[in-house]
Amino acid sequence: MKITFFLRGLGLGGVERCAALVGEGLAARGFQVTLVTLGDATNLWQERTRTVRVVDLSQAWHPKKPWTWLAGWRAARKLATEADVVVAATFLMPLYMAWLATRGLGKRLVAWVHGPLANVDAAAHMNPVHRFACQNIYRRIENIVFVSGHARQSLGKWLDEPVKPGWQVIPNFVEDVEPRPPRYPGNPLRLLFVGRIDVEKQPDLWLDTLAALVERNQLARLTVLGDGPLRGALQAQAEKRGLAGLIEFMGTRHDVADFMRRADFLLLTSWFEGCPLVVLEAMKAGLPVVTTNAGGVVELFGEQAHEYVTEAATGVALAELILAQVPKHPALAAQLRLRSHDYDKQLLLERWSALFNGTPSKSQLIKTELEQHR
Image (cartoon, rainbow, N blue to C red; front, side, top):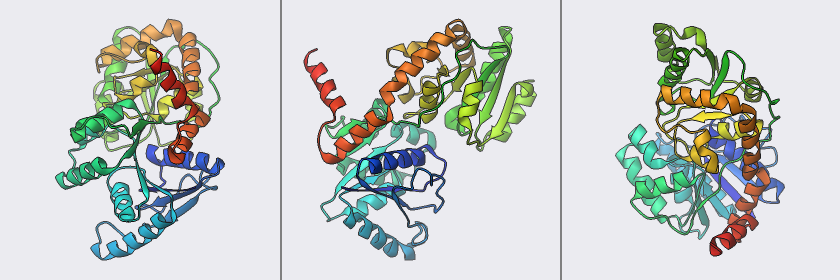
């Protein structure tokens, strides 16, 4: 079976990483996978895409150059014609092109939704034209895959429609990582943030958390892996509040696993999340997580969510949860390692394979049987 994913590019983003991992996994299961990049020729996932076909259309067309649209559509149409299933790997450009390229071909079209779009729209104030176009296309697609139940509910809210039978949840997965050695936190506590320094991550909470810990006579240091438009302002604010010595900005790094092995806590302060890969990495590494109630992330912890999620998005609440985790740190690390098996790569690739083959996976059959006996 031939599966073609339309995405913007293969850069460092979470969507790109997910596409590379799923594409590689499906190729290992006998699918012929094509990843089509529409906006960027860069491929930073070459190690993960050697067994798939990567086609760059960003040189053939440009969304802001109308005279290239026909050539772009023809190239996309040819790829869609060759495929058995076309996947719009995210909204906007990949969604538009996948929809237009498959019109009249009778091809199966699947949309892949990575985030809670109602929250995304509220934060980014989407252009009304794009909002109208995306909503109308999503309403017409029968099969949509979500990375979390929260993302699925959010799309229903955004479209003002109930959840449909063809809307299913397949969480993200990550590569296996070496577990941290079990140990209690040291002094100072070592906090780690991984991600983009932007509004939706609420970086002011990092400084509030550090300040709240200091007020409780607990020294802590935060290492930030990532970059973004708010970095400069945050550094200035840290200086002003006398916290500059407690926070270290390392920029974008590829050795995240090494930092996780040295850290005591992963700090996540997002306003919203779909299914954050960094939390899955922390779970596999046995690194306790302290997070705001950011939607999809709560689902990752199951019935133990109260151990990792604050009720209030405040520095005080985050600091108190960190201090509450200290005495049971090794137990929480083991708990997360155990929980991470629910997000095993092969288990989730089975569900992707079942989606494309049109058959329920073993895990889906077990879930249905359990629900019938309740």
